[in-house]
Amino acid sequence: MTANVNAKKEYQKLVYMICLIGALGGLLFGLDQGFIANSLSTIDHVYGLTTQQGEHYSAVLAWGGILGALLSGLFARSLGRKKVLVLAGFLFTTFSLISAFLPPLFVLTACRFGLGFAVGIASFTVPLYLSETAPKAIRGGMATLFQLMITIGIFLIAVTNVFIAKALGHVEISLSLMFGVIVVFAFVMFLGSVFLPESPRWLLLKGKEAQAISVLKRVRASQQEIDDEVNEIKESISVNKGVGFNMLSKGFFWKVLIVGVVLQMFQQLVGINMMIYYAPTIFGYAGMTGIIALLAIPTVNMLFTFPAIKWIEKWGRKKLLYVGAVVMMVSMFAAGFAFLSMAGNASPSGLSKTVLLLSAVVYIFGFACSWGPVAWVICAEIFPLKGREIGMTVTTMVNWTFAGVVMANALSFMKLYGNASIFFVFGGFCILAMIFLKFFVPETKGVSLEHIEKNLENGVPLKNLGE
Image 1 (tube, rainbow, N blue to C red):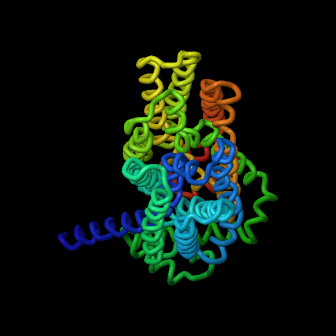
Image 2 (tube, rainbow, N blue to C red):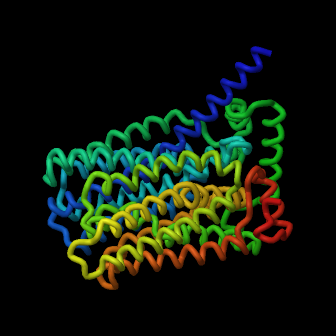
Image 3 (cartoon, one colour):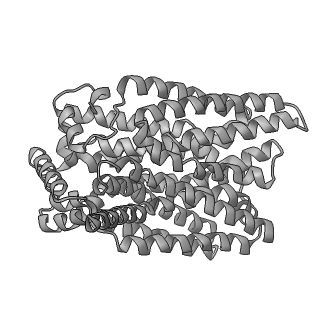
């Protein structure tokens, strides 16, 4: 009995360790997001950027991300999930190191494009890797580690950047140190990825059954569980013969592809990257430049991703998305009205500032425990095995595309139509997201990937795929 208990504890420890190291890829994404929010003023001072140039520098990461997402499916299939994560870590470390030497603006911008390429690869591969490696009983919780590591990265780099700027000012050495911090974290992610096992599903796709079983023995609790999973994967592979692009000829695949595309579109159109990238700038418009205004968003974003890991298995994916959309809608409208009350006032009232800050905090809470992790989890779960790479590639590209649209236009939109305008736009998208959820998005809690695939092929309505 004691031996069995110890074996179970060792198995659980290894599973969590593997998923944690894999989720470090999310750190790439988070370090960049937090970096822009609290370094943009320093970049503006050092390089003399206008508002439009600052938006362009921020958004070019997304265009690199689109290219990374486009090629990541090919890389993940040919090289394996693990090697792609190692590659992403290496590229992120290299481009961050070059940026730390403060090269000319065009080189700095090219490096940011390269960072986007690396993060685009990671944003595709990490959810895919975790969905294929974690046991189904905890798959949703483990997959949310991707989002959790994003939020931890945002928080860590926000704290260090604020401290550097406050201590040294907006000068060249400050910017070099900010990039230097990213180099350290990126290198840790790179080293961690080297020690990951390969995805057992990818190994079976490549005919490496012995290696796949070896990995499963390390991350599954019993031989019966291993045998069942190997059989399920083999059956799925035999049914879906041919290259992944053949899935584009199947009507059922297009259905889930559209669901994934719209989910990722809404994940950005609810306004998250405006808040993550530009919150300090937006608070500055309201005369709020203190430590609380600078660090409230990354702190809340990190703290409230932790309960999402538990809630996603307890409540389910769809319910969390509903709750998150309602919370974000209310808070966006509240922030919009707060800015309306400030219009024409040289010195905004304390009440208006408080409402704006609280609205932003509540919004981040709503996103962090719902759309942040859950959209990625569902996209990793709904695609058939042979079409998973192309499905994740397309949906990740869509996410990056709309992230770029938001980053490249949010501040200019506020200047053109008023500070309140953008909040009402994003609140409206929250309403549309709820309508889409009701009619098209399935609940995938506690359901094997192979069961979802069978339901899809048998013509089960989209919203019922997890039943």
